[in-house]
Image (cartoon, rainbow, N blue to C red; front, top):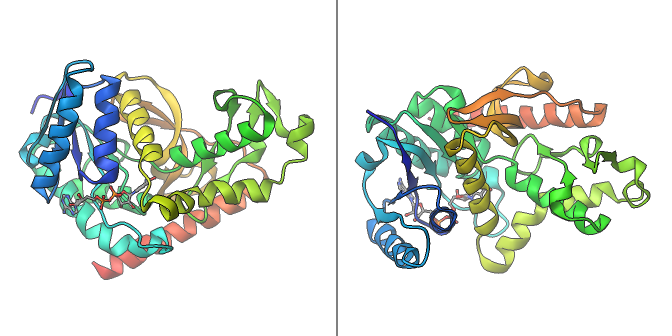
Length: 312
Ligand code: NAD
């Protein structure tokens, strides 16, 4: 089936999916935006609301549809899944989400989809791996939003403490999107200057900053019941990188194949993103503690996949 590069399908029209559709519409990257949800009345209502807003933006068709609509899309975004309740960890919803995500990915593949699949459902690393297996797509074409959001949170918090704009902070969080994620302080650069070389940087409470970054999602969900703008913006950024074949480097969840000593599991590493998804995975230099933490994160994720395999 010929791929329509101007078309995106979003599966799951809840908080994340609807916000991503709205942000994608405002960004003007696609002229055809389709919302698919098991609750088709919800998908229809969200699509109508966004379509009305589109009359004041760059023209696009925003509508609800079924899985057949996903077949010729350039990008499918999966946001359907179970949400953590209260303080429930992302990992404990894995089983509930896996059944939903596998079903969505299988139905998208059956529709003839050959584009790039972006997975945001939590726990996102495991869900991206589940979606890749269920869809049968090449691993590079199935990407989890992973720590793209955590990296933005990390950069913003560093920027606030150092009195510079977030865009001027180079820094990444790698590994699991979740409790075992690794904030890579050794790689932080501000105008090419390492953190230790800056007076405020050397004095930073790194453990506290890493914890704040990791807990950011919980803090937001505690106040409003869910998170949406950050992850939706990460989805838009990834869609943009694919749509424009940017070859930009973003920390996203991909199948590790030996980089930084980890393999066989989805987790975030710096990836070169283009029209076919992950074109290349980079292996950044980490200090010994960060490298250890990344391997621990991979072990945790392998454990989740083993549990899911055991359940299935
Ligand atoms: P939500 O409950 O508002 O929306 C989920 C939607 O999925 C609902 O509309 C539901 O009808 C739909 N759905 C359920 N099963 C389906 C199926 N089989 N087929 C099609 N649609 C189905 O939840 P939300 O707040 O939008 O969160 C969605 C997912 O995104 C959750 O897994 C959540 O944990 C995750 N999330 C991820 C990040 C991240 O950074 N990756 C951030 C926030 C939320």
